[in-house]
Amino acid sequence: MPHACVNHSNICPKWSRNTAPVLTVKSGSEITFHLRHGYNNLITPISLPSDLRGLDTNQKVPIFGPVAVEGAIPGHVLRVDILELTTAVCGWTAILLNSGLLKDEFPGPRLRIWDLIEGIRIPTLPFLGVMGVVPSHNAEPDTVPPYDFGGNMDCKHLAEGSSLYLPVQAEGALFSCGDGHAAQGDGKICGTAIGTPMKARLRFTLEKNKPWIKSPHYLTSSGVTKSYLRGQEYAAIGVDGHLLEATKKGVRGAIAWLVGEKGLTREVLPGGRFEDCRSSGPAQLCRRMFDSLEHFCEC
Image (cartoon, rainbow, N blue to C red; front, side, top):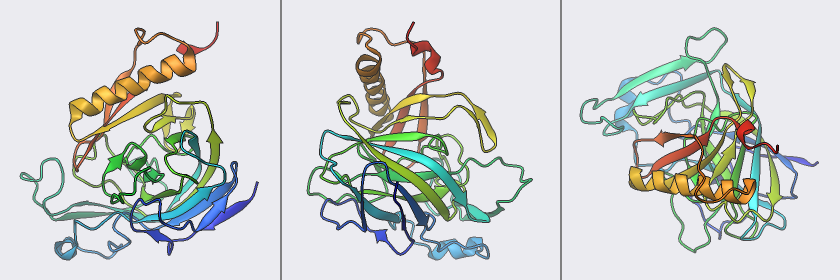
């Protein structure tokens, strides 16, 4: 299939159906994105903690795109296969001023520059913190929160080999991404992960007849991915300003998948687990995950 590129100059300031696409591709196409990190490359390998005092912590997360997919209309699902993620040679983690879950106890600023080479002590699992399509309405939400169409989800399981499913809400879907991370702990409690510029190779495929996908869902790969050994997992993501409501939405999404994809009744919800994607910021995310898809094979 055709292969094209989006470079780091193609910054999209917000999620908007009125933004002209930088590329229009067919379903099945692969695109390589060359991405700046989540603070627009303003933090560099020679940055000092004192440099963070002048950093605008309210700036928007830079996203790159958008890419339109021919034939995409509301009601379709855009499957994004994460084929390859390549980090820069270094990354950073910071406690920014007035940021993070315990910002009153850890006021910052603090900064750690990481050398992302073989032999580092923290295992890397690169992923994109931001992936999404545009909303159905004419409002133009900013790039900092997550939404039901994607956005700043900071979901560390969206690594190489995973597939993200996004509900198309506008013609063309208009996909953008950004905010590369080399690694992240659960919840992103200090407000940052290991941010790094990144090259991402993605494949876009339109899927139909999946009305149960009303928020981001994803399927991970099985086996060894980078430094991690993991089994295949399916998850539905719930997004809300309150953790309890985000949890409920994640559960409802998982139930809808079991009914629509596996043919079960709504009353049957087998074992799974909850995880918190991000515990700081303007919105909470909670995943309802199923650890092994072998439970749902045809017998």
